[in-house]
Image (cartoon, rainbow, N blue to C red):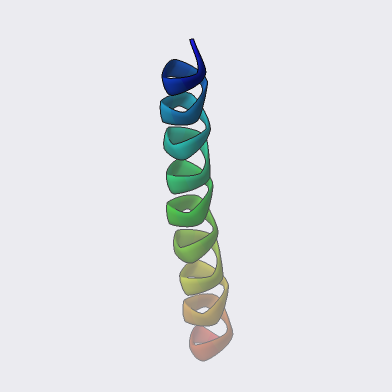
Length: 34
């Protein structure tokens, strides 16, 4: 059970990290555009 929860938390943090990286990259791109 603990291993499953750890796996789930790891997947969430990885997804969140990827989303944050994409979001900051997009904002930076928009700033360069204007």
